Image: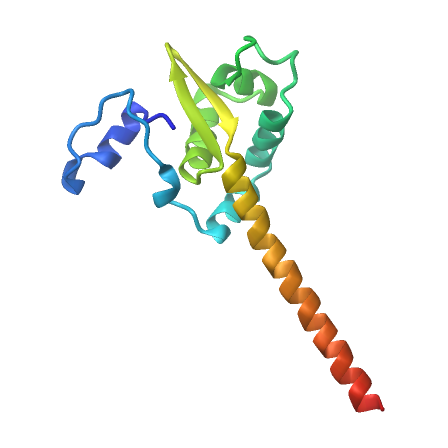
Length: 145
């Protein structure tokens, strides 16, 4: 994932990592990976719409054939560049989206592994709920007999 100029301060400074070159890639998972944080991000309709667009880009909105760039999202969402950048920074920091700078453009893509982990976390909750419901039904049937 691409480290933007804004992120250089996050990686440098007191952490002892020093100044990062603009072409260094880092793993944002260490900053925000908890299931509740990711779900909170996806609770925003705009961010969810961004993920849907990245999953199935509308070709009429894409200005280039080599991926989805920030300007494509601006056109699709009818939002300003700062607003789109804010949403994308949050999605990238959560590890749900990757970003890559190519020249003056930043291209975004879904992070399938992170989305699978999110799905697995929700699946664990569903299984626990089913097991709890089955145990309750068994206890109710036993008590009634």
